[in-house]
Length: 167
Image (tube, rainbow, N blue to C red; front, side, top):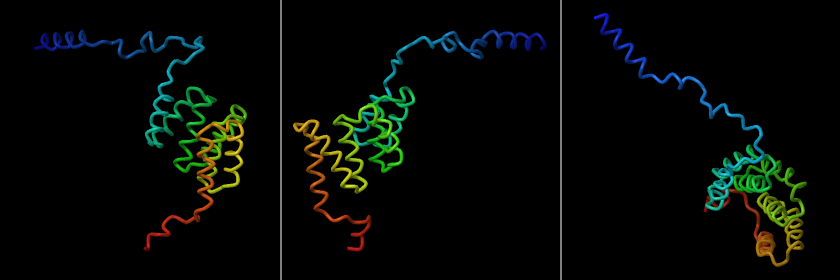
């Protein structure tokens, strides 16, 4: 009986891969000399989620993209836009402040910043940014559409949520 137990124990230990209890060569490899991080998957996935209207998922993925490259203008702009759509203006304001010195005089910045202010009901601030965007590129369709949307927003009364529920 003792010999059978010893044989089972020996066969059992022989089948174990003791290397699984330590780090492999790949996991401890030094990558500090790399100048380029090739994984832009979070940014690509975030843009896709945003276009599909999944703003919560886009927000999370843009945040992950910012973990990889903290001052990436595309990730910051997407993070700010998805924050706006989720009404997380505290988060979008931080992103717009970081974007200001990087792309502050580009049409994308002014269109997005103006739309953010429009969502908050700050029509004068939105108008300022939309006009700057239009002055940068009068042929830009998005800039023209934003100005049209602003004109339409002025013509409709502002109502609180639930005003029409009693009807």
